[in-house]
Amino acid sequence: MNPYNLSTADLKKKANDVRKRIIVLNSESPAGGHTGADLSQVEMVTSLYFRVLDCAPDRLEDQERDIYIQSKGHAVGGLYCVLAEAGYFPTEWLPSYQHADSKLPGHPVRQKTPGVELNTGALGHGLPVAVGLAIAAKRSGSKRKIYVLTGDGELTEGSNWEAALVAAHYGLDNLIIINDKNKLQLAGYTKDIMNTDPLAEKWKAFGMQVTECEGNDVEAVVSTLENLKQEGKPNVIISNTTKGAGVSFIAGRPEWHHRVPKGDEVTHALEELSNV
Image 1 (cartoon, rainbow, N blue to C red):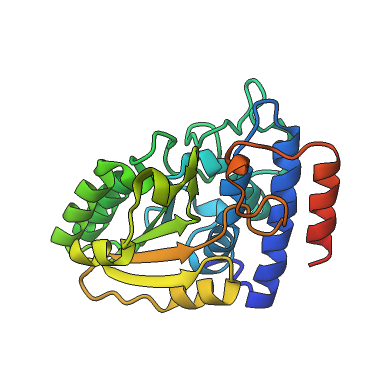
Image 2 (image 1 turned 120 degrees about the vertical axis):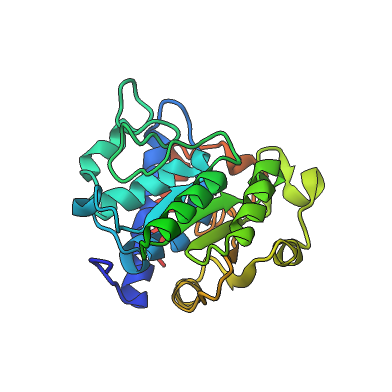
C-alpha cells in the first residue's frame, strides 16, 4: 500500500512543489543539471511515489516492496526532489546536489542515496535489470511490481529491445515500462536524430500491452497507472510529455537538456510556478 495515497488535487500541488524544488536544485548545482528532463517526468514520478507504489521510506529492505528504476539517470535531479518530498531523505540534503562527497551525485547511486534502487546513467541499462527483477519476483511468488522509466532518446539503445524480447517471452505482467516521450534528447529532436516512431506499434510487435497517456496531466497519469491490466504481458506506458514542462521559457526548448536556470531565470520560473 502507498503510505500517502494523495488525491489528484493534492498530487497536482505536490507536482508543482517538486517543480519549484527542481528549479532551485539545478540553479545551485556546481556541475549543472538536466532541467528539461527533470521537469518532463514530474507528474509520472510524483504519482508513483505519492499514490501508486507499494513502498515507503521505512520499507527499503522489504522484499515485497514495489521497485522503481530511473533508467534515464541524467534526470536524477527530479527524482531526488520527489524522494525528498516523500521522506526518503531530508530536504536539507538537496542543496548538496553534485557537490563533492554529496549523497546526491549527478546520476543515481544506490550506495549513496536512500530510495535509489539501481545505479543508472549509462542509457539502456535500466530495463534489462528491471526484467531480471521481474523474473525473480515471478519465480519467488512475490506480488511486487517493477516500474522502470526510460527516455525516448534512450530507446535507440539496442539493450532495451533485447530486454523487451525476454520480458514478453516470460509473460512479465508484473513489469511496467514507462517511456517519457518528451521528443527531445541531448542534441535535438529525437525524430531527427533516430526516429523511434511508430513507437506503440513497435512495442506491440514485441508482445507488449501498450497504453498512451498525456504524461503531464495528473488525472491521465493516475488513471493509466491504476487501470493497467495484468494479462500475461508486460505493460508499456507511452507518456507523452513536454520537455521542460511547467515553465514557459524552458518547455520544448532543446537547449535546456543540459542548461540550468540562473539569476532572473530562477525568479521568473518560480513566479510562474507560484501562479499555477
